[in-house]
Image (cartoon, rainbow, N blue to C red; front, side, top):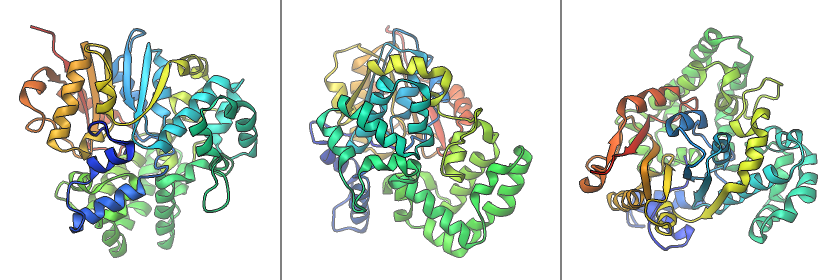
Length: 414
């Protein structure tokens, strides 16, 4: 669920097209691919859906490590700074995601106190946020980012006003979750009720009695069986097939939702709050992303100075780096979108720029790693796949969206 790492020296829009458009425009698959790139042109993810706690466990970040990650909503780039790496590059093809990342960086640097930072990005539902934007953030933003947040949308409001109107209900994903709630209510189910459950046992009973049966409805099976229906999750046509894995999409979605709803206590899982309540918990002991937790605020404020946003493709960004210059690579689920040639080019650059002991982490819609047989053998043989560690970390991922988590480590030179 993120922007991707595509080829070459293209603009971000052209790079997105190069990655997604794998069929001719006049074919049914080609039409779906072009509809996806159109949908992906604006804000997609108000919140990133990869668990940073799992990422940090896999990366084992040190203070001398240099990290490159796909930015998406910018949450994890900031969250990694809880471990105080030396530097971090946040790459994305989507200008809206880069604008959101820059806004979060400005807020971390310049909002004076934690309460303002939390109100802005955790509560995200106060006119005080737009006032704070004018007073504290806008003067420190570059002109492109200012224009993005000050621009009025079709409803006549500026984009920054989303932070006064439940920000997490906006963007492609926010609207998709809202539509899913509407469908549930058509069948008499209010998904947000699950946040009132006292423990895992009650969560599982509510899920099995109320949410799971929705996926047996004929209308829901018809909707989820259409590739277009999951564009709101940021799933392009090529990734839809990998996610389905030969099963009906309704079966896959109920499996992933069951893990999200039933495998972790709600007071530990902010992903479940976003899915079922469409917001974060507002209590004093609320589960929040690492970058929004009070105890990490000082580290995030210091670390924000060491994060560099980059608008473009992952491969393009790596080409500008010298050999043996980076330690950790975070690809999210980007590779699910790629052709074999794109994968080999990406991993060629990763291998060239990797320092001794470098690690790469990524997620896949399916369970298995997708690299064998697709990345050139002479490149892949330089890396060790940590299969058992990957399996354990994937089980720990609270977002529950992906089929597999994968950790690769650079082999020692002969």
